[in-house]
Image (cartoon, rainbow, N blue to C red):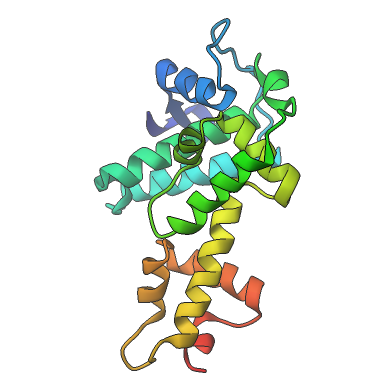
Length: 216
């Protein structure tokens, strides 16, 4: 995947995104949990104000800024790989295509399978997990895993993981010594790499900043 910005007549700036078809179709196949019957074909018209597309554009903006400003994201192979997978997954969900209807069909999942996924998320919350990792470990498709979490917990697997990590950070901060521990230490230890975003989410959930919790 690559991105570049260019100028066209009348100052109409464009951001050109080039995606590898094999990578995109492999991501879709993982989401479906089944081989593709025909090539993936996106609707050529993209509604830029659609919520899902706005989120996808936001991720592109972040990637472009990192690349242009010498950020750490492009230099970290593991993180960059997961970021690219997230971009592909978000586009598959947000932009209509010839498999959209199939993706939106609910898939029944046994509660035992979901309990196993919950165990994985809770016992490995400090590791770099993706929804594909959890689906593979439980032996079901990504779509089945997502439908199961939506049905039983009202959230996504990664949303559930974020909640687990957030509670772990709070416990860590409440028990920590402010003279030897920082919020950054606790957040990083629990899997939060973007401190600013973490602080906002923490305050929204607990009604106070992480530093206020640490000073208790």
